[in-house]
Image (cartoon, rainbow, N blue to C red; front, top):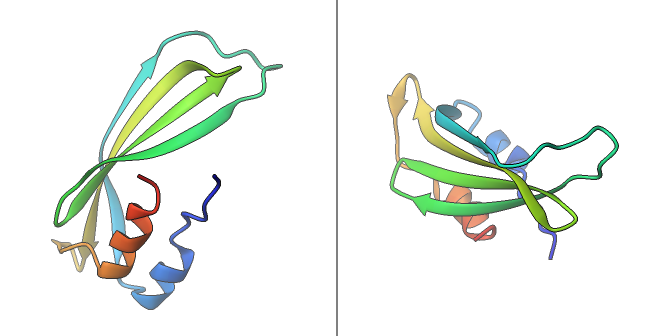
Length: 95
């Protein structure tokens, strides 16, 4: 099932909020060729009070070619803050 996971509307509600990438880990499992059609699957792996971790799978013919782990932190005025409730609701929609 496809879901709208974009945070555009939530960003407009809190324009001073920033999502900062704390870390990214990429695991290349198999080559992906230019002619191949790639599907992406996004999963929420971890949700804490001020950060969350996403896993992105790159698939070709249902074979995982790469995995990306991304940890993001919510910040306002250079201070880490709790993730706003509207963001949590969006994140819970991609579990």
